[in-house]
Length: 130
Image (tube, rainbow, N blue to C red):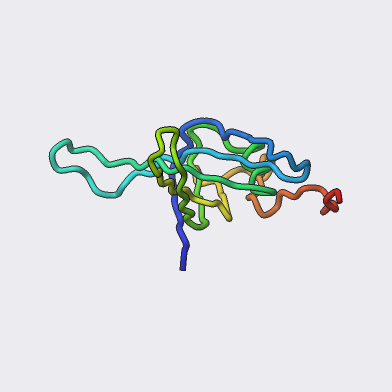
């Protein structure tokens, strides 16, 4: 089973990429996740910076509602990839593929209710061009 759940803060606003497909956007951002253990020597918490990628409705949600410094919860799976760098060496990459994104900063008033990523939709499903 490949599942991961994280709570952290966005290090910057999400980056939106055009995939060439008019029906799909790709959004990437970095989530700073603090460990619950302190380093004994420095008396500070360790922080991991994890790349997150999302597509479709999740990308629309991230583009519209997520901003630098926000605390969010992300669940999804890990994806690893490898590629040859310009110098010919094999490089390995690990990123989180978001399946769900939620606000984790506290309660939002009913007047300013913000949906989670499952309530944002791409209008109607469109047929892809042939």
